[in-house]
Image (tube, rainbow, N blue to C red; front, top):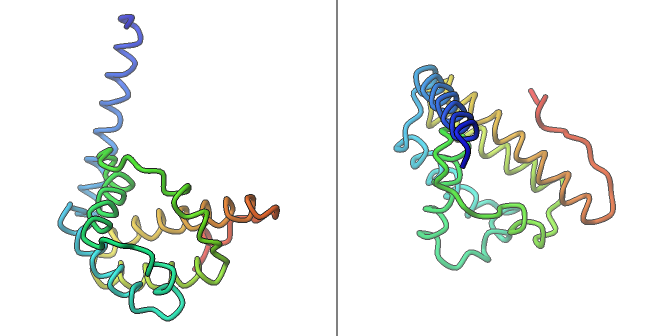
Amino acid sequence: MSDRLEAEREAAAERRNLLVQDAIERTGITEEMIGELVTRFYGRVREDTLLGPVFAKVQDWDEHLTKLRGFWSSVVLMTGRYHGSPMRAHLPLTLIGDHFDRWLDLFEQTAREACPPAAAALFIDRARRIADSFEMASATVAGRIASPRHVLRS
């Protein structure tokens, strides 16, 4: 690897570290908080009349929750712990707008209960972006066009 490329990678890593440190200082997010949020949220999802049947396909919930904790750690703390393909896993589920809306309703409620306000706001922002991405990808696969609906949700 060239010296220039190595220097660019090091600079990028330093910028990422500064962003993560800033997010931690502003929000107080910890791995423990992520674990609590994920556990509470997916407990609600499993009991929900709309979402529960979608998630009934999960065979090993301990394994799935570990994967989801890694996903959210990667999303909010940029840890790189998640190495899956969430879009690929969700596309075959034929989700519709009601699924995304309910997922966000439960997620936002749980985040506000389990996290301090700044942390909840960061989780909710990321969740809305994820919901929009998944919903637009699902529509594309079905031959439709969808616009983001959740990012500006109040």
